[in-house]
Length: 251
Image 1 (cartoon, rainbow, N blue to C red):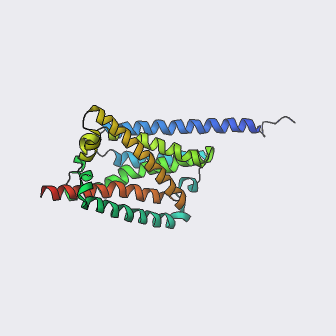
Image 2 (image 1 turned 60 degrees about the vertical axis):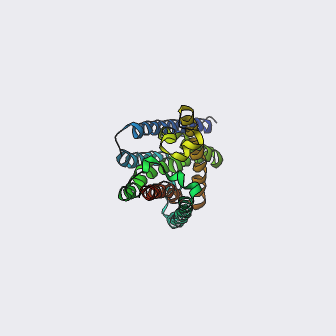
């Protein structure tokens, strides 16, 4: 019997679902590309306003597409487990960073001119700018919405690769001055144009690998909080320790 209009054929439903999925992904990538450019070339700390607003829009878009809070890693039932994983991640990163700052061999990695700050300013960056201007949007976008959408439609393995690859590309613009801002990076790649682009490629590769780790934390804990905790600790504690190393060096 031919399908009626009230019962569309399965093939038609698959085509419609695939088209809707593709359009949703394209829209999200277009939004994130525009945000990435604005964050790089817009006024300072624009991310404090833009980040939470765009994160909310992405969550609403994902919910409209049919994703549940479990798909997004935002379910209340995994909140406690996610908090425990996040606390463990913060402790581990803090211990590694402290050891790195104390050892002369690795101390130069903290001498980044972007974080040559007074300790009060460094704490403001760590407690306000990093969580609300960076971590919130990136975790919602890459480990929440994009990972959830791709996982639902294409499976878990390719979802991790897709999310992490995009997370690496997200860091192209922010890493353009990396070889000039960080003495350790300049020592490895050089401070010239070639060194700049090698540093960018290195940053993209490193953050893509970091994205895989963050996706795994998200999977194991079932909560976006675990990935957000590791992400926050990596950025925020690095800022505080960099400011401390600069202060000790110039004292």
